[in-house]
Length: 220
Image (cartoon, rainbow, N blue to C red):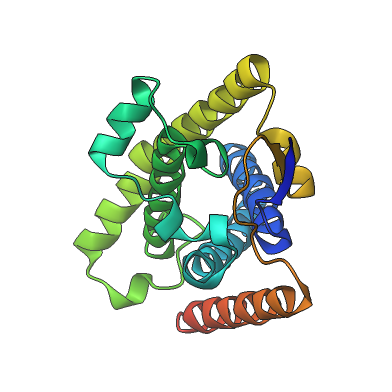
C-alpha cells in the first residue's frame, strides 16, 4: 500500500527555490563586478530576509520543515551510513542531507553578515561598516572575498552533486520539492500546508523583510 504525504509545505518550497536563485545571482554579480554590485547588495539583503524567515519557519513551519525533525544524533547518522536508517529518514531530510542544509544556512548567514560590514575601498561598502572598527571591516572583507564565497560555491556544488546522486540512484528528492508531496510505502505525518499556515508564512517573511530593511537603513 502506498501513502501520499505532504512533506514540503508551499512556504518551504518557495524559500528553497528563492534562495537558490538568489545565491546563484549573488555569485554571478560578484564575478561581474562594477555596476552589478548594486544588485549584489540587493540580493544579499534578500538572502538575509530569507534566512531570517527560515529561522522562524524552522520553529513553527510544517512538520518536516522544523529543525527539531531533522536534527540527528551522531549515533543516528552512523546507523544511516551503515544502511540501518529508520523509515522517517527517507521522508524529509536524511541525516546527511540535514548536515548539508545546516552547513549551507550557517555559511550563508556568515557570508551575508560579513558582507554587511565589508568595504572594497573603491565604490561599495556594507551598510554597517561605520559601526565596527576598521580592523574588523578589513577582516570581514578578506573573509567575504577570499574564504566565504568559495565555501558557498563549494557547498552549493556539493548540494547539487547530492541531488544528482539521489535522482540517479533513488529516483527521488526533486519532485517533492516542486509539488510538496512524496509517495511512501509507510504512513507518516504530513506537514500542515493550509491557508492559515500560508498566511502565517506571509506574515513571517513580511516581518523578516521589514527587519532587514531597518537593519540596512542604519547605515544611512
